[in-house]
Amino acid sequence: MCAIFGSFSPSMTEVLYAANKSRGSFASSIVQIAPNDQYIYKSADEINFDKLKYSDDAEYYMGHVQAPTSSQRSYQYETSHPFETMSWMVFHNGVLTNDKQIRKNYLPHILNPVDSSLIVNLIQHFMVEDKSKKPNPIKYIKQALEVLDGTFALSIVDCDTSEIYLARVGSILYYNRSGAFSTLPGDGFKEVPEGTILRLNTETKRFNKVGTFKHSSPFLFV
Image (cartoon, one colour):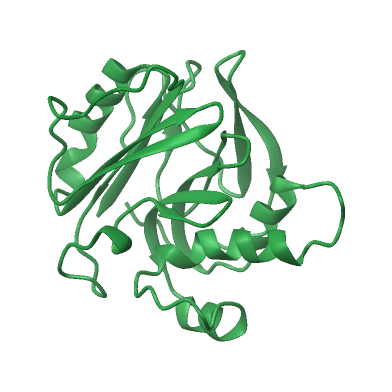
């Protein structure tokens, strides 16, 4: 099991971390999102918030707690969440069932053994393949998600713009009207609809629907 969570408030982020950490203590991470940068803090076990320095320009905070996967049983920075490319960052809860096919068809050069690493690289792949002059991040996310089989709950960061997106199939994920999200729900949280892409509006502090994607949900994976 794993969990993902995020909030505009550092204190709320710590509350969400405490609520979700029972789902995995093999590895943990906190990412601070600033308008023009992202600050990543990864730990081989639980987060020590006494050692975590909050950046003055951070506006949003995201995290992940991880149980060990079948492909990676020892901690390494490169195999823990979030996974990154030049333009994207992804946190994932779930299990992909077509990761071997994805590697064969799209990403034979990606050697990271963790299936989650393929998701961020798929988004980057479709971005690079796009020959239009105007970037279309929702299009790239949609294309990547429609390749995936299995279950996933995702928080996605466009590192070029610091925009934040949510999506899920099968795996659980909830959000509220204050711009927070969490694998485990709390008061005022509602479920992210399957097959829907939500984007965070930093002015209204609300997640809004910005797209949909084709999907199949074979089972619910918590």
